[in-house]
Each structure stands twice: as structure tokens, then as C-alpha cells.
Image (cartoon, rainbow, N blue to C red; front, top):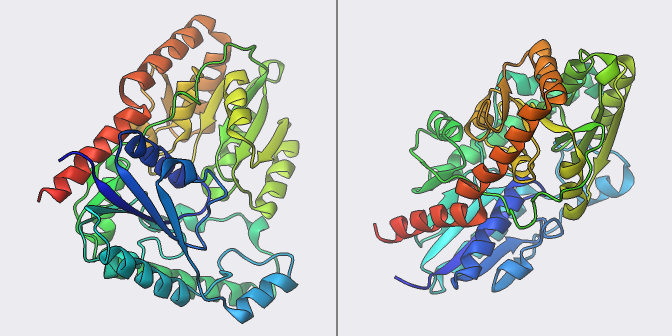
Length: 404
């Protein structure tokens, strides 16, 4: 088997999953495989577009919902739980996409997740061999429910809002489970995710680790500045409030500024974080939607990177940081403990503010240790975590499914 003809489906928002997909397709196209991308118009193609890493992109329209569109046009703020499109209309579009793929001569279909249903409806209607890359099942951990009080907008409406959220969430989980039943070949990004898939769906999966583009994320040999960096969507589950509390325990005379960079942000949560930082005497700045060039520059300027999301399935941030030669302090949870090598490329610690603070101080004050971690990190990425490494892992899995 030489050249593969691959149909790719996604309905992703901006974020790490889209970056991962771009990396996979870049490898496949550079290795002379045919890559055709099929998307509903709701897919985010502005963030890291796939045009240059695919042979063609075919976009399918989604029937608009008059009421939902009207609500979004009237109100400045609409809770994210209330979608701008009808999910039933998205499902109908994905059925049409599947039928289009079924009528073509593709060897295999590579399916990514759906921002509305998680497991996409396209799985139900595909008749060709397919591989579903499940970045994560719906998250039901208790920590997801522990949203800070500042998130609640109106006490009088709170019971109604909570009831609506509960009903929508239950429906989302029901849909996800229904469509996941049709996934016969599941890939995941970590052994932590493998266990999550087994618990959620009762299905086996194969781990196919992701990689980072180290032609972009690389050492720039520029001067380090007095700040630490944390990267990811500015929402409660990323643990930025925990980072602020931890940083407040670092002695004031060596306490660096905290810079948070995200692809998107929850405005209420951003305000809460700024207020918390002021209360904790932590100098904070939050940036959104910056270019890759700017992000790489920040990785190279930071004294270190701190990464403490709650039960993150994988997380690109450690890979990006290490590729730039920047040591990282991470929480010993989820997929994070599968990428950071403790006492070699960074420090893995318990979710305890004092332990995080001690780790920060250790790397800020021990230049020899910092330098060794930096050297180790670059070599570690080159050895196992490049796009080529990840691409070969994916290709092996695609061929395994085709040859069943």
C-alpha cells in the first residue's frame, strides 16, 4: 500500500484539537497521501486553517435557526450553553457529508470530534472504514461543576438557568453516547484518555500520541524576561485561579509576573482572575488570539511555563514549551504526567499551592538546573514528539484499520 486517499471530517472550534489535526494533515500531505477535508460551515477554519495541508476542502451549509440567530443578534452576551445553530440541523448536514463520502472512492475516513455533539453524527452514517480520533469524552468530573460564584449572573434566574444547563448537558451526553456506538476504531491522545473512553463508552481505543511542530515551536535564543507563562482557554477548568494562589506564595522579591495566553476567553472569568490577582498581589496580564509567532516568542521569553489544568486529557502546552527549551512546572494529573518527565524536562507536583510555589522558586533560583532542563527538553521533543513522530503513529493506525 502506497498512496492513501483519505477523507477527513471535523467540526472543531479553535483550540488544541484543531492544532493537532493540522499537524496530522501536514504530515499526511507531505508524504504524498491525498487528503480531502469535509466540514459543516460551523467548523472553525479561521483558526489554523487546513487549506495548505489538504488537497481540497468541501464545506456544507447548515440550515439556520431563525430564533437562535435572532437571540444572538439582540443580546451582547449569550451563555455558551445556548448554541447559535440547531444541533438537529448540524446532524442533518453531517448525514449528507457521510453520504457524499460513501459515494466516493476513499480508502479510509479520519474523523475528528464535533464541537456540539462530541462524538460526531457522521459516524452513524459512514459506510467506509473510519478511524475516530477522540480527544476526550464529555467531562463529567465533579470539578467541572465547581464553577466559581462569579459565574452566576442573576440570582433570581439561577434556578431556571441551572435547570436548563442540566437538561442540555444530559442531552449532549446522550447524543455523544449514541454516536460513539458507531465508532469501531477509536484513537486517543493519552493513556489517561484511553481509560476515560473505556469508562464512558465501554470501548477499547489505541493511543496515538500527538506531536508538536518544532519547525515553529523552537528556541530563538533571545533574552528571558521576568514573567512566567500559562497557555490555554481562559475558563475555570484550566486552573488559572489555582496558579494565581500558588504564585502569591512565591516570595515577593523574586515573584515574576504571570502572563496567560488563550485562544478564547470567558469574559466573566477573566474579570474574576484580574480581581483575584489584585487581591493576591500578583501582577497579571491576559492575552487572547495571538499569532503563533507571538506565542513562540513568549515561550522563549518566559522564565518558565506553568500548567495546572484539571484532569487535562493531553495538553499541547508542555510540548510547545519543551520544544522552545523552556522548563515547565506541571500538575501531576491526567495526560500531563505522560509528557513532562519529572526532574528531566520539568517538575511534576501535586495539586498543592505550596508545592507549586516551591517548584517555581526552585527553577527561578537554580540556573544550572534550569539550563539542564532546557537542554533535555529540546532533545526529548526531537526524539519522540515531532509532527513526523506523531504522523507515523497515525499512519500506522490508519493502515492497521484498512488491513483488518
